[in-house]
Image (tube, rainbow, N blue to C red; front, side, top):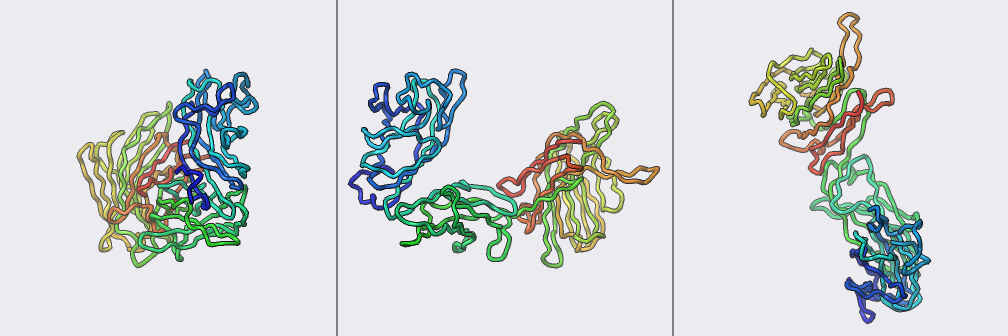
Length: 467
């Protein structure tokens, strides 16, 4: 994207992106420009009065111990034998024209050019040949009376979940005033819709929080395209000067519970919520200490939203019994007692479990594809108990047979488990339409953590933290 001094594009802002190898110098020890190939001359022509913003990321590995430094360089090294002794060693530096003074780029620098010349970039190093790595460079050139902007977040091909999303751009103007930056979101087959405005920058960064509500509805695992428009006090709006960002966004709320980790989809529309929930995982291995008694359950289920709703579920346990790993499978329609399934199961077995509701009946099905067996059970139930579909890791509640007091069992150390969870006809659980992520904690102690959903909206992991 280099331009020449005679280019008509000099009246328009421009964005240049490229990589600079860490072995590229700006000047040699004698103060002459380093003209080794590739050249330190970027080919970007700078005009007097033009605003220039340079951003850099990445690292250069130049030290004998193998540690790397960023574009800001190392302020603690000796300046001896540096091409520019007044600037940090291994730092990214610049100059406008072959006669202009050298300056520090670091992670960001900005200036208004006083003279015409090409932009030169290089690394201030005493031993360029020994350098490894590279810096990613973004250069904005902004002629007088114009504006420009680049994305700060999100990056392209993003996957974001939560109850809000941060959108931010770095916007600049030369001899004009930016009024605000307006962000837009576009769903497949629809026109862009304004979602939020930012008018007060923090060091040229315009930021807004979007609540994932578009046209009155929450976004549920939807492809979305973000854009931004710079609106100035003078002149026409500048639409998407840095292009758009494309990815997936999903509205997911987080709840902390003492017994659950995993995900739940909630559907309050219509008479029936879900027809099916399906989960697939490998039985995690129990890690047991001496004489340990603990439990960990992994299951899929359906339930309602009222306090008296039944919970139809089927799953498997990875437990510790007197310090010995123990594995089992079961089904139940809570609050009724669980029913053991007398089938062989071992750590590492691949399990596929589902709960289906049809014509007033819940069917619980489990398939051990490693051992080659299947099991099904059915139980009558109301359609109102299908509003919530879940794939859960649980610290089960146990009851003292003598006192009948209930308590939460110690959670078996199962390491980590990867779970794929879908509803109805293989729809990702992240499609909700409302999705909840459970994090397990008790008395201020995190017991298990749930990861964000993968880009497909159905796969996640649960990590054991504490018993």
